[in-house]
Image (cartoon, rainbow, N blue to C red; front, side, top):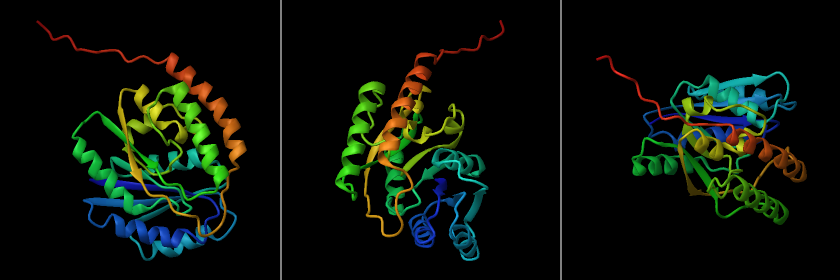
Length: 241
């Protein structure tokens, strides 16, 4: 499989070098791969570290947002610039393990289903504070009850999906938390695959859990609106007699 790994980063100067090395090791057996790090308006030395790494890793590409536009926009920028048909995404804080990407690839190959457009990571053992675990479980429960996307952990940054199908989805900020529901709305299948989750060693989360919960409620209503106004016609071309 040819894979573009897209990683949004914002003020992750202490995490990017080791993460790049891990991705390179994890994907060495793939047919082809590239790493696209999107610096989302960092104010620390993240961009400088990425430039240094470019001299070592020819597969590394770096995009820069002049100002911070948020995680979803950074992911969208990376996917838009990607060269390969399959996209793997990772959070830039190092809590997702790049070694899990080949497991998602193996799950796709085992399914042997062309309608499978997305494989979503499921952090079955979270290395986070009790409050973050609770808020994530609460948000996932509300989302599943309303959207019925049958995905236990849409907040996991580790995903594998088709580039063309992603770019065909309607874009909005925070779309990355609702990708399974939107992919299903568009006619694709999604499966969840258990992946690891590691403690953050450097820095801190750039997003408050209460902020995400409040914004998430508004976003869920928006996705419900999209689903109600979306249709999937069965199209057949009429041949000439």
